[in-house]
Image (cartoon, rainbow, N blue to C red; front, side, top):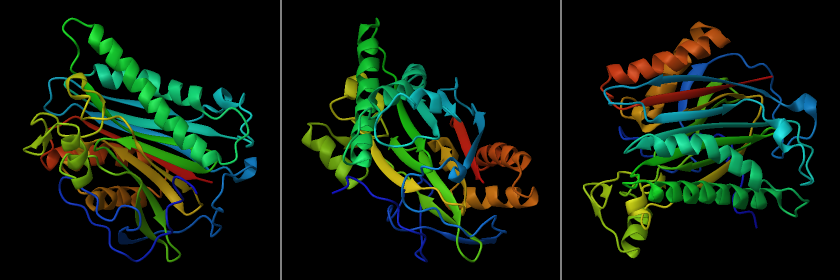
Length: 336
């Protein structure tokens, strides 16, 4: 049995989030925005990894960063639009025509953990990527990604422990690994990844691709308590407001680095992937952010200038609405 499966197709169910960005009914719900636009094609890609170069959809990332009222910028990003050559050595049984990697790392307590993750996570994913033919590629890749997160965390913890005084830094991560037309989204913490796709009527729908790891979540709180910790004022040990992250040496017994992973297959109905740290969601809900972005994209006919403008303007809008945190927004355009 697969450890994870494709996201369900868009439905008419409602998708809700609160001001803090808590997802409800993660796997099956989405929001109908009612914003219409023309489709390039009605062709839907089959739910499997594509093996023909002509079917590969193009990806182009745009990024905006704002320091906000923080003393320093603790967010980092990894934007590898095409790192296919790094994966050509493998013999996993797939014809690999394109590999991309995009990630947002949101630091807390300092920027050391986020910088370390930026420099090392993609290296560890490549190192652990299946290199031989396997019976179930998805299962093996999931295990590889989990190990890459573990290896990255352990390496940083070692470095942190050797410093005097030891480093207290931590960092969340929201990552998108794209193999041909299949995306694997891994996250720890409270940054969000969403996919915006049009339905048959040309309306935009939101597909959540990540799950927030908050100490307020029942399963996370139970795990922390079972490990001997506690949650106070919505924070682990009354201090850290996420329950999964890289680093956090003092609280590693409670704050784990095992990611949740979601798989989805890109189609020609898909328009973009949005990855953003919690700084954006402190000013906007998911629905508000996508609505804001869509209006700018429509005005600019979904061209590169529109994506660049939307990325920057949605970050500015979060600040105008009261977010004082570091803000990092990555929009990955998807096109034929």
